[in-house]
Length: 125
Image (tube, rainbow, N blue to C red; front, side):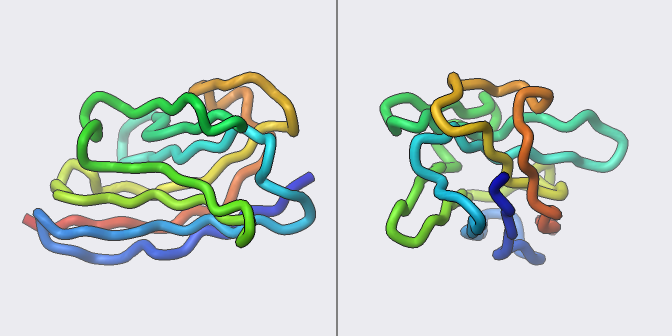
């Protein structure tokens, strides 16, 4: 099973940018669907962005389309979430997640077996 460690969260003013990183160990991120989820206080966990293992298909939550970009660096075994034009409503703990190698694309948290510990993103107004 792959182990995931997120970093890059922090406090930023509205309109600012952050890049979250998810470094994998124990197995490759290649040929795996990968995703970023977030959970804000009092809200359900939601899929912010996901990428197919062939990198030919991606998903973005409507509220982050055009602002967030998910990408994968196979050489570094790392997945990124570039977040631009951040808004206070983006404040949440962000989690990286991985499905099994060769698994189908999904935005359902129940179908992701490997999770990072989360990184806090706080956007001030």
